[in-house]
Amino acid sequence: MGEFIDFIGNNLADFWTYTGFANATVGHLVMILVGLFFIYLAVAREFEPMLLIPIGFGMLIGNIPFNMEAGLQVGIYEEGSVLNILYQGVTSGWYPPLIFLGIGAMTDFSALISNPKLMLIGAAAQFGIFGAYMIALALGFDPMQAGAIGIIGGADGPTAIFLSSKLAPNLMGAIAVSAYSYMALVPVIQPPIMRLLTTKKERLIRMQPPRVVSHTEKVMFPIIGLLLTCFLVPSGLPLLGMLFFGNLLKESGVTRRLAETARGPLIDTITILLGLTVGASTQASEFLTFDSVLIFGLGALSFIIATASGVIFVKIFNLILPKSKKINPLIGNAGVSAVPDSARISQVIGLEYDPTNYLLMHAMGPNVAGVIGSAVAAGILLGFLM
Image (cartoon, rainbow, N blue to C red; front, top):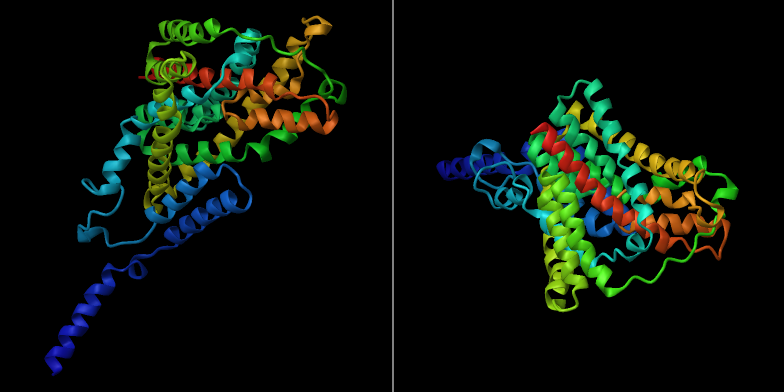
């Protein structure tokens, strides 16, 4: 009987060493709380639920403690585990181009086609990327790491993941979570900057209604856009090629089923896998470092610079535009590529000062230009740094 009790006791003791309770650290608990906070923001505040719920739940999955020496092959960093195989879509850069395919298939570029000068606002907002790049260099990050960190300012999660997978794989978790976090916090971060940098008179500017764009123009735009951007920056081809291909599927009018698949089931599936694995990659032992804290700080700074650059550019641009063609600087924030959230913020702030001044269609111009701009910026950084 005593031997049996000893046997059961030893088995229970061995079992205990495999449990999360025995292997938990303060870091695991901190990251679990962060994951719960992300889920709270998504459910209670409706901040980007399509992103924050997969990422937040992924943080819970990635920070369930287990015995690393047991060879269980359940962790995302364990070769051959299911999570590790799914995570290869992030580390190898497979998921971001597929996300861009879906974005292209759901994006209407009419506002940009009807008023091409709005593309300049999307270009101006990319100053946030290069500003953060220079600051990161000054803080001691090497050029490749600084380039991957700077892209956060584009407010484009897939682009941030794609670039960091090439330039700084060891920082990818912090960069991806930072990029998606600031995308979700667009309604919190951007309005104070927009109010600070504009006057009441500027906020009341009414823009001319956009002209009607023909079907031919819509079909030609992705073809011309691909040739112009990718001849200039061939290294951006995986993202830009898929973006414009998806848009051609939408606008051609003869590939409706393919466009619906790209903007529906495909992008939803990839978003789930990408969000879950990015969240799981925040394993406490890999994620809770001083560099991660710096990356979050630089990401916020990059995003602020990008928003301010777009608004300030419009103010300067208005100095040379005739009165009838002036641009409301409240759409300058939309130059970051958080589609369509930053464009919605332009609309919301504009309606606060004039309930009849609808800026959404105008803001969509620089917003979709920002998507193209961030991909071009990523291609430039990739071309220079690789």
